[in-house]
Image (tube, rainbow, N blue to C red; front, top):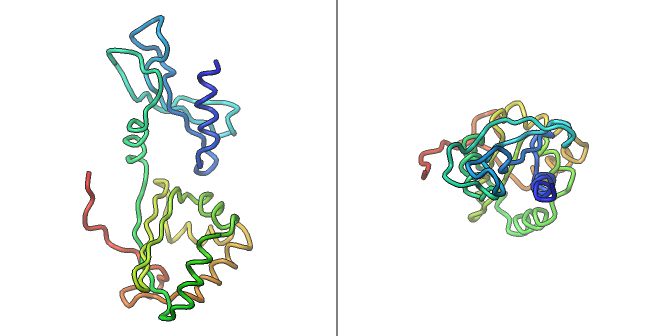
Amino acid sequence: MGYYLDFVTSARSDPCTNGIWRIIGPTEPGPQKYGTGGEIALWISRDGGVTWQKEKQITRNSPFNHAYARRPVWSSFKEKNVKTFGMTINLKDDSRLIEKYKEYHQNVWQETESALKTVGITSMKIFLLGRRMFMYMETVDSFVPERDFPKYLEQHPRCQEWDDLMRTFQEKVPEAQEDEWWAIMEQVYDLK
């Protein structure tokens, strides 16, 4: 039993989207009746780990039991359930403001990060070249920027405060649509 608790512990420490916990582990019968492990399955909990439901069996007809789920199994599964976005914006042409913006992003307010995860953003990275910024985001499949970014601002008063503050450093790129602040970029290549 202690072996499976390791999976529960790691699931609780991973960032979860929309309150759904996921565990991938060798929970299904395998070809070796008396060995440890078995076939790999994905389990989900929508109530904080009180009850679990098998979502999908990942491996079948393996020659040997799987003792644990290795990272590549999770990575290949995860890629099928993630949306990616590239977005861009400029910082104002003032080196002092740019440095201040970078300082703020060394200590992003906890309420804003939690709210981003709550609306379905699972990963976000921002890169800077000169004053042009590029943001790379991974989200859950159901994420829609036009619908979910406004929801983020409603999660906590600090979210709107953070957004207002960051806008004092930023300006739209000329290519942005009239209703865009961060302009959504077209993906032109994906290495698989």
